[in-house]
Length: 176
Image (cartoon, rainbow, N blue to C red; front, side, top):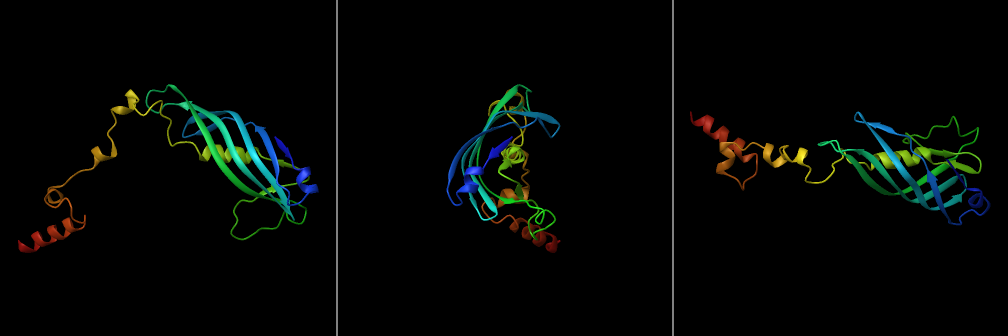
């Protein structure tokens, strides 16, 4: 969906508030399809020279499934953003700026925000959805503390630097 920025182009430097509803198509993430509802961008935009600054907050609800029990999970997303869009003309289309892999571009008096919305929402998602911190299916998995092995030489020196155990092994080998 397009955001009309004609007011900002007529009044450079003036901060103009906006409320923009958008739609994010379902996304395939780690083999799971995640859907998004109620995508809303709120904030301000201002034009200056050949650039347009848009800043504010994106809110939406992501829908996925719990990694443990596969129950549906609704995950609220709220992420602030502050982006600069550059006016695209026939002269700037082929122009590459070193060090910038991706630039946000706009043309005319409207800005396409769908890609920005999708990028912000997907980057804000957790690595895996969980129905609750105490999901019965996930509670059986070992935690990071449980999986760490403790060796006999580390038990003798629990408060020393971890590499001191290596020094102790080297000293023991030299005595043999």
